[in-house]
Length: 98
Image (cartoon, rainbow, N blue to C red; front, side, top):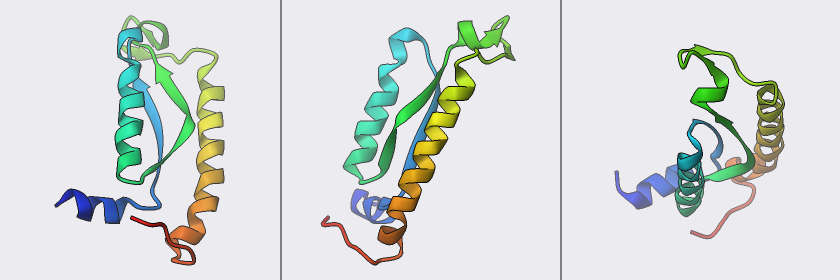
């Protein structure tokens, strides 16, 4: 699939990110968001960053920190809001220049 064909299919798609990262690798999520913007995939500001040290017991069992449910809720609220806003675009009622 060419990048142009991918971009055409990706329009009006929304992306929320949940990443398992270390402090040194948190920028990879931001880089992904920039790449997705290039192919016109909308992203939301809120993201959920899980830490292997803080959100996993013995680095194996998932035990999210107290802040994680709120982070997920915020991201989902933004996804729902933007999803509604993009509904007209997906329905073809408005167009975006390539």
